[in-house]
Image 1 (cartoon, one colour):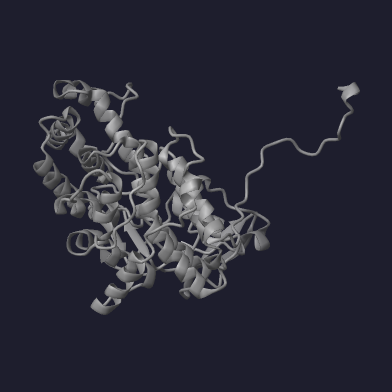
Image 2: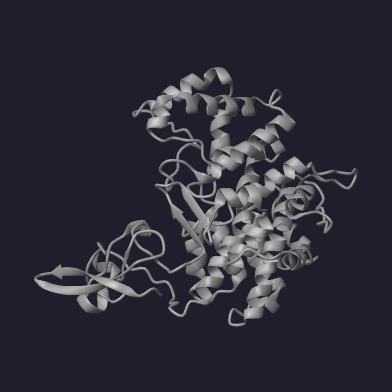
Length: 431
């Protein structure tokens, strides 16, 4: 914990209380209210915890005003352009970029854990064929603790490490199996001669009847999607993982909880909502109609994939993702896909419209990632599972940091109670 350099004074009914103020390495100062209840008998009220720092962390920093996203101090646009996903995984987990030897060892450890326990195939077959892949992933990842009990002791640093490697390695396999199961195709085993992103694409699109060669442009685009979604500070799913972990739950259960939270349409479903919006627009000639609706305050329609709750000026991830989207669309073309035609024309129309510039409704990472995944041939039901496997390393890094925090306490939010006060029970005959 950083040292307190000044205090805030809270005055209640003429009585003053001193609260320490901490200055982070980046971001606004933080008032320490941990002793507020003991000193004053009062709590703070902060729905959504939007003004509350729930933990101390040195992993990821976001400055929404500047459009800045840093992983261990490195800007996301540099990492996405110059690095690759497993190197970013190493950075998030261990705090520094790896040497060549360290990276080779890390990649080898991940690669050797890509297969799942063979009995897990039977577990998949217990789900209905039409189950959403996210529902399947929540169940299967939670069940990993039943298959890998040699890495569930959170007090053992080695078991924590093994669990981390296993989940980073196996989540692409599990996500691909969920996809294959949903479309009635046989599971495709991982291939250790392929890199992380290419292996995932191979498991999703290969079939036993013929060879499937992964295009390097598509593999690079997928790797960037993984990288750009790897961590995003204390968002809802990350906070869920931390809250679950604060009780001492095993790491597989914690990550399953994060996946369940990510499934919510207000969180991980943004790129799926973007594609559904493009499908609603349907054809290029209807774009002016929908742009007019987006400008109408009385119309509930909103342009999905534009603007961002945190980033107020631009999404730093979107620039790199746009480059990948352009490369993928040039490779695969848009002529035969009306949805992609709408996406390209909508992007141009919005960027050229002063209204959207004034409102800072810029295309965000969800807009471009949705375009890429659609072009690759993924159904919208797979968008959030891909988000989940990308974010797994961030969840694990945050979980490991929390477990090692000497100030760790089980999460216990308070409430502003507005219900009935004490009243005596009345027998049913007298009511």
